[in-house]
Image (cartoon, rainbow, N blue to C red; front, side):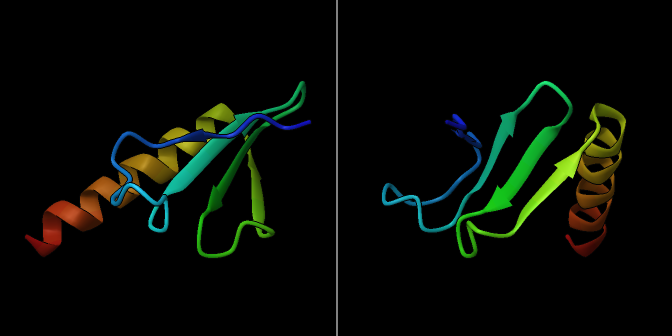
Amino acid sequence: MTQWQKSTFSSGSDGASCVELAHTDASLLFRESDDPTRILPLTPTTLVGLLHRLREAHLGSS
């Protein structure tokens, strides 16, 4: 059974707006609560790149 961990930046106590991470022996798993059946398998390097890109996009829109 996959154990998902919610982001500390998730909004709402009902968990309706969040992203979650889990891990397997081979990869990290990433999903959004809006569509929990759509799971992205990522390497640690890919996850770091994604987070950097999201941060850049967020800071650019401020």
